[in-house]
Length: 432
Image (cartoon, rainbow, N blue to C red; front, side):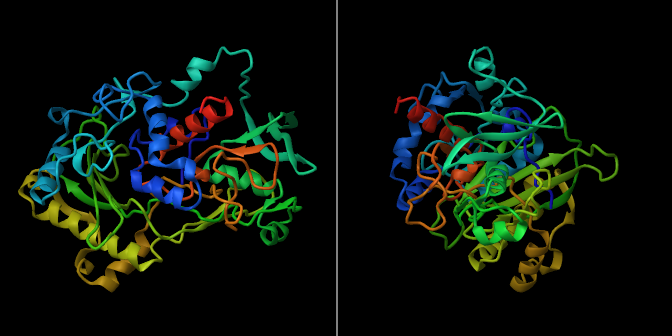
């Protein structure tokens, strides 16, 4: 399975789907329950608001209108035919309208908030970094790969970098890892910080036994469904315009499901245009792990997400697949939109055991990998850092990226990662 990440300036905000959803209040209540009392929804909301310039709701409560990240929603009159059909079918099925999915406790069908203004992606490189490029204390080094953290007497003193084929070292009073939920634990383990038995097995000298590094791997697992498309899609539309979030039947996790739908044009000339539908677990209970393959930073780590091993995760995915199939194959709004099923469970749709097997075979990433260096109390054996991102047992080393999340949020993670950076930066600057 391919797990693409943004290994460019701007990180994954430079390559993602530009969906700018926030985590829900219950996500942060769960973080607090794990000992991170400074991460309540009331504590993080000001930083969500600070980073955004919401063109639709910026002047209203729970929003911001002077932050660096522009946010807008497609008005329904601009929606593509497949998005209009999806919204009509969802409303007919009883889902409520949701004009602002970033409003706390909102749910249902409505427009996605997108960090794209006038067709321009509002990534961190064209927003935050553009504002800071001329600062005399900022140096951006291209063509470099951080190989490991330099440690002396239990403190981080800098990093070792492979740059233009040469090994270089850079020292600092504090080192902050922002390499993402895959890159950060890989660098940590290559530095000898992580689960000692695994490091010894790979051939890394152990500097600090920290068993949580690479554990608690989270994502939003999904499966992909496809139907023939009965109209010619336009490239001028953003693929995802209409957002459905809901709570699965029998679940006590609010908004634990989301479904993406898109009319995908055939760019290769081989597959033909198709209707792409992606029922996704917005909060899975299963977790996986990340481990090194070798001591080479260029050797990508092994990821085992353990998707759908939990019966509760499979049950909710079955519900979502059946919901999608019913709405698309039976609702009148799709008669001029979709045709024959191209990818799906077919006759196994109503056989739980067979559908479970189909789900396991077709499981795919939601592209929201997180939580591999989670924050938590020192008493938690899998906590890697405190709630300010400071690594347990290593001085002058901090983590600020998606790996720090104790669990995933019920949303695309881009907005939350930016919020976390704003919040910890304010604390470091003495502003919080």
